[in-house]
Image 1: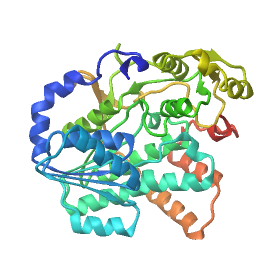
Image 2: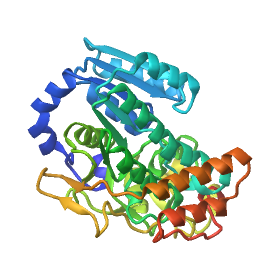
Image 3: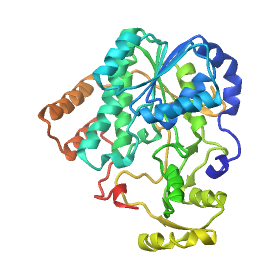
Amino acid sequence: MLNLIGRNQPLFLFDISNKEQELRKVVSNSRFLVLGGAGSIGQAVTKEIFKRNPQKLHVVDISENNLAELVRDVRSSFGYIDGDFQTFALDIGSVEYDVFIKADGQFDYVLNLSALKHVRSEKDPYTLMRMIDVNIFNTDKTLQQSIDAGVNKYFCVSTDKAANPVNMMGASKRIMEMFLMRRSLEIDISTARFANVAFSDGSLLHSFNQRIEKRQPIVAPNDIKGYFVTPQESGELCLMSCIFGENRDIFFPKLSENLHLISFADIAIKYLEQKGYEAVLCSNEDEARELARTLPEQGKWPCLFTGSDTTGEKDFEEFFTENEVLDMQLFNNLGVIKNEAIFDSGLLTEFETNIQNMRDKRAWDKQSIVDLFFKMIPDFGHKETGKYLDGKM
């Protein structure tokens, strides 16, 4: 996988090796709850914890199928541990989850990986409201539950898209970070912003596998470049932040010769070469669909690489803003954003009240939510184009 994303060695190898003894000591003496643990990042974090023999590791996710695969993967890769390992197919926002926490809430570390992560989720006001609920309010709810239960540390994953956000997903995570600052007065919190997780569930790169399997064209933007980490690296980054992050720290991958921007189109070409196919560029969707019927037998694959014109796309990625204070000396390949507990309590309360009013009325529109986001983030770079990813192949 590394060669597909333009490098030849693991990103955090030095930092993990340097801290391995301490990691094992902490993990083996601790109890962990992983929320959203059956997604790509959640599974990666769960495996990083599991292989260091925790006393207790409970994993919650709404997807029972993905949880079943997680257990199969863990058993096949690592076997068993002395501690208590269980999975629970629960919705974090549900009453059932609340009862579970009341009965089973004794943990040292809570890691929240649950999120609606797609830019395309802002296309309609209903999915957008669920994104707010999952990314912001479920996070705040589980934080309060962790405080009530005496949890030592709460980790929550953010995103590089929260730095100078241009889409509603990134902005929701930026607002989530504001809520984290408020709770950080009551519990230690750390988080992480990181790049695209290569071939994670639902990602464009993951869809390449489906396109090959279904004999369909490969489609990718040719004007957007991103930073990519492997699933294992995403798990390592989250665990490092969780264990070693101080209160309000945000960890991120340092940019170096090992982590550089690469376009989705370039990855698509490398991916096809690895599969034994030559990429053939097409001019439109109809041509690409038609050629998918005949080219594969010739060792070729139709590709459609286009410019991006959909709402919420950002043509570059960044992990921090010019106003944030950085510690670049603590780790070899990990940077740390150092935050003070700065937040506008009145603004957070107003946001909560406005969203709750919309939900109570059982009626809202997208513009009302967008306006509310602009009030929370005055320099929000959102631009509505009227076009969305679901309108493209």
